[in-house]
Image 1 (spheres, rainbow, N blue to C red):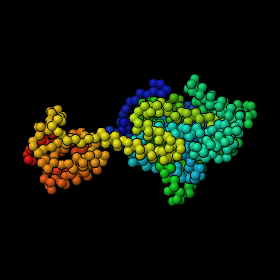
Image 2: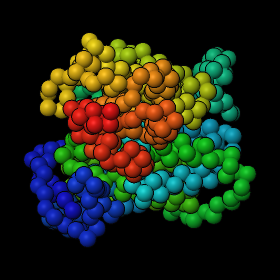
Image 3: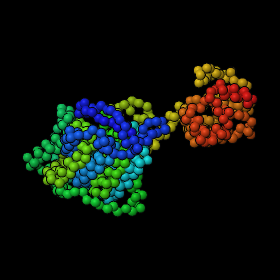
Image 4: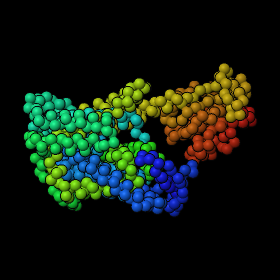
Length: 582
């Protein structure tokens, strides 16, 4: 087991040294690279050099992140259609539990903007009880970690993630306009067009004081980000906005006015009422939450690694995220995942280990237990402004510009995912985006793959760089050069090629030097071709298949069917074998 020992050279940069530890838990892949261990990162930290100075820095960083997390947790909860207390409980539970079990040294977990829209839709259709069941089922992410699927979940295409992230950003922005303008709305529909139609119909009821506080808070946060980026803008915005409302006694709605006083109480166990009908109805949403939680948490881990030089354990992180979401569902919370902004704040505040994430959870708990009256006095307009600036941060303008300058297939997938997220549903957007991107990828691979007959004008570079063309071949021998993955995307071309078989050809050589992989469909078509050898009186020789392709051919029985003598290490050797067969 290779363990990274971070030595501080600044608040956000570390130099890595390595040594062996926990060797009995470590496994090696077939390529000799170490697999991610399935134990929490905190164990490796404590196994190394962790002293009182490190603990002090973790405490300071944890308190700082906890102060930042408190308004964000409440804002995300309100935007999701649940109470602020449920957002705070999520920050507490996920912060402590995922911090202890997680595979990252610096990541901080809690409610995030990525979940706001899908949570709002679930609560709107199925109530909070439905959200609890969905969150519990999303704990399947832990199983993905146990089965070491941490690397696979990263393969959702970048245009898809960019598209639904931009769609989420626009939808979050839209969901906050009621509180931003101070409109008295009992219930806002979840779909985008109906929401804006309602806003425009109620715009004559705009509340000047509420709009002024929200706009002022938003401008202040943008100024803080531009001039004082090291100071958490949401904390300053909420604090200043709250003081202005309190000092001038402005008629602006607060958390307590809408939701009541936040109780100074610990999260309590809440049993879940399962039913088969609800599980079936909510399963697609649970899959979406699990995918988003996995993606965002692993993305946050990668960002943290790039800032510090550390290396996260992706599979253990998935186990922690799944476990954390199960715990949140059982103790009155909402879905949670890794939070990029809070993780970056944690690193810049001097964090040394996952202890800081745990301290962050206890800091939020302290606010709930001892400062709930102050928390209850926060104006909703300030939290709406926090959500607006969060949605702006999620809108990756440079990434969108780069994709729009790229291939048509990429930007079309991004735009489709974006519009489906905004106008239809996030679940549909993710599924359709991934499916379309996969189909386009297969089309690209099919174009890259080829099977060509070697005619008298073609030249083939054999493995030893010698040149061979059709004129060099004995009469009755024909060469087909195959390049690219031999998969179902090129099966039709393979079949059409051999349907035009010349009866004078007695030996076919399949030159496979550039075939890195072959799938089950390719094997099936190859078997079908080989089955005609005896009835049509011809032979088949495979020339220079790569080692990986050779292993697959051997496992699937093709080499036994052909015979070892008809699998040659080079085209020259295949030609010599063909002369012998003739």
